[in-house]
Length: 259
Image (cartoon, rainbow, N blue to C red; front, side, top):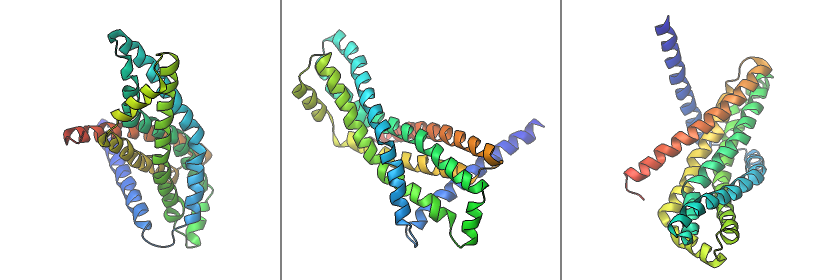
């Protein structure tokens, strides 16, 4: 009995990976063929990008502030408070900015995407689209994927800046550093490798945020209760995948000697 349940579990996970990969391939392929639904993409850019702007800016600002506070306590022990700008800049650009931005966007939008598409599925709106000759993947999935690919890197840049701004507020008010000293060290600390790492991660995270929500929305079962389950699963899986991909991508960059 246990062996049968285990085999079903493994087969289910393998099938899920296969279906997710097929969803990704088809979404990318649709970008090179018509129709492209540009208006839907712009609408999703507004919903996903501008709609997440406030929470991303607040998260970045207070993350940078807390990071500066905690780092100040450690650096003051060794008399190296002047390095505060360098530590905050590197931490935000390399790691905290991309990951926290992706987690915030996933919490807000993966759930929304899953609930919206799941509601359309249980109310048979997607079947109606197929009956009218419209491809649901092209109409629903592709615009959300490319809207996230465009907006998430931009949100990450803003989160990085707000994080460094929060660190500057703490540095000038608590550590008593001059604003010029903080920003000079922060600017000089950043190299091409740091910016490359921090700005390539959002593209991987964007795929996760958009397609995980779409996947669970398209596989919703059980009516309105199933929509709630799909929403919860989308957020959990997206957040876990973001952390897992972040670890392996960082490990890959380190192993290849890129930075």
